[in-house]
Image (cartoon, rainbow, N blue to C red):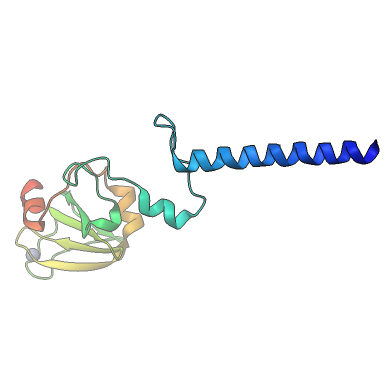
Length: 148
Ligand SMILES: [Zn+2]
């Protein structure tokens, strides 16, 4: 009696497991149309399957996809207690400030002289700039938009 029951239990469990495996096979072969596919636990795979919901021209590029960000800085720019002047023309206001992808900060005067500003960095730029509201395909378009 005891052995018989055990055999029956084992047969029942095996049938149950076979049914469950069959269900899994069916689900993996033919996912329900309204249900999302089971998500992969592999983070690399997840990164590669992220779809582009928007066409490229509407997608907001990440900071790593752009060459840099820029803003206009009308007032005199004070770095470490000193007003920055352009080494090319001596101008000290109305800068375009660039923050490049390598976190370096550059200043550009109205005359187009560009100088790297080692006293400023990306953290300074982020503190002092507004949110990015516009993307320019070229530097020239960006400068024109900012009035230079
Ligand atoms: Zn200049």
